[in-house]
Length: 597
Image (tube, rainbow, N blue to C red):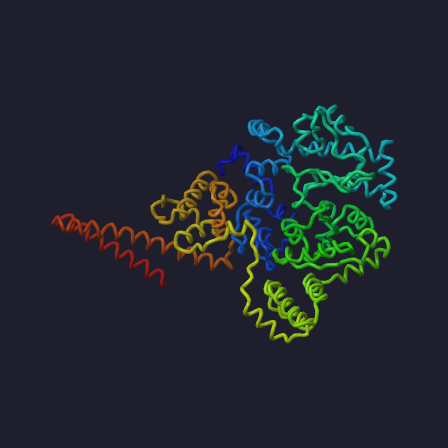
């Protein structure tokens, strides 16, 4: 168990036994059953061909592309960028399992850093604003604005919309009456400290959009100004629970439909999203006033194959569309792009066109690279120098395409548009330096090394064959291992076996602190044999090889002793040693004969 944990081992085991890794992974990765495993696109590195495997029986995962592997704790830690104690706390909260008192008390020492307290505070503020909008006379301005934007009460309820009334301390006074500690209030960003003392509300005279995480917990707020307040849109500040680059507005509401339709529509604004949902396009999510980041793209690629980006029909919208191309390429994700007509946004355009025509427009969204190459070539002048510069600019993007088929298609498109021979492009592609897609930090840090050798085959057998543990763990084989890494894993296996009476890979991983060792274990454990015959043959051959290795070690020690006795002229002991040598040679012969048989 990682030393960073201050939870009892029994509590960690309870959490692990109560959660299903397949269910947790399925929230963010589209998994398909393939034999004994589930398979999907890895959320930790760019890929188009699935190499990410999850085994439900063993409760482990492994990616054969980037090498990361582990159990539910490993997945949760890497995906959500949490520490081990934070991961245990998060999973316990999901499962409604109370934390052990000592651990809870220790966790509370974090004070302002207490994530649960911050989420509870954000939820309290969201509820306050929601009640003002829906019931309070001070919420009339917000209700009128929603009516103006053609929003109905059902949408306001579904997205828990609110209104922050005019005045400097409406929320602050309410939360003070609720006895919320001042340091927690300040850390939340809901109130702002004045230079000369006192506080004022961050959100005033704004329509409020609560921002939920994937567990449907409020982690922040967005506000749209209804007066002269600037900026027009304002979000909660970054905090330990809120990071704009890792959140998609509307994802909890959209996720089931995204998975059902295998499609996600991505817009930039709160009202764009609300209008699309209201008109039936419930597979829509929105970025929080910033361009999509790699984390958000990976999150969506795990949920749907068809990603459609909608951009406003103005120069900033076009530039945003072009900027998104490199990031999607970098993540190895295909998408389609629809830039709307000038002076329109998804909200107004949908209301103007109607749902049916808007759906047809979505279907006509261009493949991202088609859009990109067309836009790049659009303004090029017919002069040779301009065409040469354009080829130089486009070749890296052609080189970065994942498949030969795509490369050939877009090379033909560029050749046709620029009116230059396709052979010229192919020569440029061949001569250009290889473009290496930037890997995420996870991929660089966890790239796996091969795990060959008898010692690793022993560990592999114990991981994959239930009865192998009883056979191979019946004696202390610590001296058998020459690899320090293999010895560490073997000792952890022995400890797990002694405690549990079996070798459960998911539990074993809790005994290992080094992520590289976890990657090796998960890679070995997640493989499966084609049939029982292959399993038996593997185990039979392994046992023979182990016996031969042990004989070799005994023979080596015996030969050294024989040479020592010969030098000293001790004949009686030498005779006995020679008899032992003969017996070892006979045993070796028997093993080799049986192996051939």
